[in-house]
Image 1: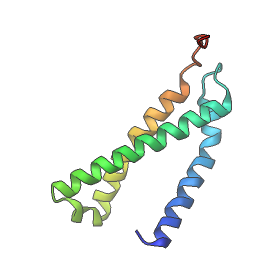
Image 2: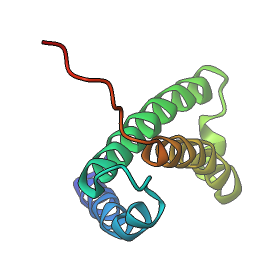
Image 3: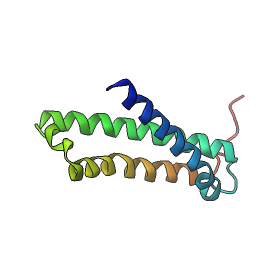
Image 4: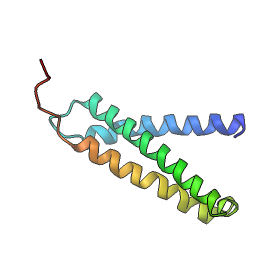
Length: 105
């Protein structure tokens, strides 16, 4: 990846997480602290998106479909397959109530 592309992706990633702040504040469980819900959302989203991107990229190369990702429609489908499940899992985790079990002594 070229340096300009890396910087652009990084800026888009940061902008997405800044724009996610109001979303997480609205959707979080009332018992969950706002900052904790945001950290859960960001961590889970990043983890799931990274894993899905790596696995789907590996499958595309393995099956010889990587040249198809140079076209617009397959690229959009690929990105949807990466980011939609990540968004759904991160939203689900951020909406869960806080864990109420007492810490071990």
